[in-house]
Length: 434
Image (cartoon, rainbow, N blue to C red; front, side, top):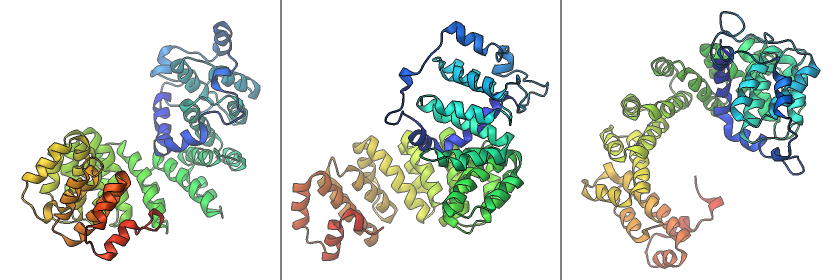
């Protein structure tokens, strides 16, 4: 596997937790040296330090690497003792050019070995934290160490303290599982702490899915905690999607019915709709009557409506009756009203009224209450379905009072709504029914 391809695979880790990495690992903490004050070396000194690592453009950028197979082989780069590895890494992390830094960093990973990996990580942690690149590079480095020496890398991660511990655990375990999934699985099985075991399980599933999607799927399906199983199956689905949508959709369809399958469908829908919303809608429409697929249907509706709201709402209206269509109508109208209140309102006004549009009207009312509270409440009150109308009135009234307290309270006092509805509107946020 070429180094560039390997880097893309590892980057899958960051996609599931980029926000966590940004919060856990970025921006200098109080008292830390900022990136702007990091010691730098002259261009000549940097070139001298890294000249032994440099190779031709073809070997770095995408040509053959090491052996003629083009595969990334740990430890196949220039041999570096721990001290030399630490110095080379420090020099590379001081490189201000982001493209050159990333190229040299990826090349340096080919020289990572069991003997110098700990020194590399120690040197890395001593450097100032430089925003996004810090979390990305830390993931690549610890994942590579996990591939080389899973037990040692995991021991390092478990000994960490502070904000980066969870991220390190997931990263090294993913690397370990991608090379030796059975040994990694046995290690995770022996962890007693539930929270720590779940963190390691996330890395285990992610790494195993890079090697064997079926094995990763079996791991998730064995979990007794359905909530966590749903979360982890989303990671497997995203890995499967990299192999192509046709293969991924067949895999998802083979999963047992339930919320775990729904999570997989949701992840596939999220990826597919961004590239081809019309085909994604055609595909997910077959699951519109399945309770576990409601979230996936809503995901397609929302993403499509951000680009082509009229097409999206027409598709939503064409779905068979049920929760899938209700969710799709709500999502499309919410997005459309956010982009163009007038056009969305004209669509509702010109459409035959009935339960088909009740959820769309309720979503429209909640979306526009800040700008047009009186009009929004008129839409909420006109909804035919009793339950949908009640929820729409409550949510619209809350929005009215939040954004326009005086006129909202005045309307509520003269509304003659049932006492239980008024009580629900006035219920504090932390005590509202879910």
